[in-house]
Length: 566
Image (cartoon, rainbow, N blue to C red; front, top):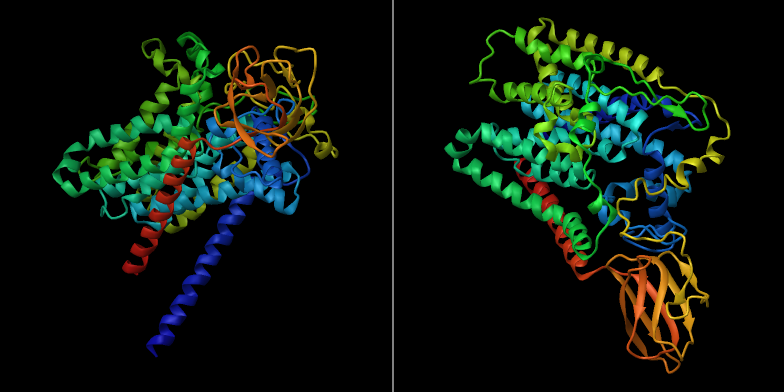
């Protein structure tokens, strides 16, 4: 009888999980409704991210993994996107594209739905973990995925890295709460969150580190009062470092080895950043002002740069709560203050001229993710605490948010273009293919597409290329061996020559300072079949292995703990 009862409870639990997942999926699809057609909304960075997906897919198709060089870009000169811009999660749409032969625009739309789905899930888990109330978790999740700044990222900016980071941002605050205020058992939450953000968007990661340190500083008394909390905080930080070195160390290896355009760019003056900060009308605006179809004549460069009135109003309800005090609501009050201050930083009233090091942000509105998550958590809980009929009130407000969000999404300009899937080259061709060219070595010549001995530039050498691999026959016996290969130089290129006797010899690979291409050198006058290909550096291989083993070990640990507790 007991066994039957347990089986019944298990079946009921699984049914509820399926119901929950289907509801979340429906809400996620609704949030992506402007894309449920054969049209494409032009966004600022869309072409850059579509190229990332396509290049990884093409490398998968030819058996190149991991996809460190996007070899099809820049007339096949190759661009090392993966070494400077995290791409782990971009493999999801790329694999869909390779397996099912979907169009890149189709997989992009599917990917947005997947991201929205998991953003809802992590927000629900985080909010429920902090406030222990399912109604608050539902409300916060709906508020978060329909937050104006997140929708603007999707439909105006096309900032795929930031959109991905929204999945993990709630887990940062849940992880901090768990260690500092909670049961202090799930210390690993913040480690996974930092890994996810580091492999989504580096700038968001950089902005979150001081926030984490600030919250720890605000609660240093509680951390040092319980040595186990301090220990787990250090363990979580240590694991996060190990998980993240797979991206950061290989990136720093490249930057230490060469100079790139991103290194030489001057940071814009504080006055420019201040001009891009928000006016009062922008702060309170709740409409997506731009977003338009490719080849449309209705392009508008305006965009909403605030977080919307709904979040501001709901967060303000914290001031209406009875019995609110710092001792019992310490974390929540800290989030409220953090949200207010970070939102103030996006305005024209913030003294940007005093903080010139922050000009790396370029746009003040990049800080909007902080008040978005802070006001989401505070606003959802405050509304729940203020109303009397909690269940019905949460349902009614959720429906209102969905209706308002539907109206906001309807303001995204879509002009019917039945041929959009055949005329989107305007997005993925130059100059959109590599964004602002930040990761090009200085002095890169994008017009020099020939292979030649630099001692006789007039004579071109025929070659074949598959991905980042080039092969050619070299028969110049009378010239010093210095061959310029039409591949942009990044540390990791290897070259070998196979002579007529079948002996294989490794060649010296350097940077051609004249065009920033791969330069092959040898002290001997040699002939034979030469192969040039990008291989992992030793540093890359070690770091990728360490991070992968650490991630697998952490997942195994979590599963063991889960089963033990169950």
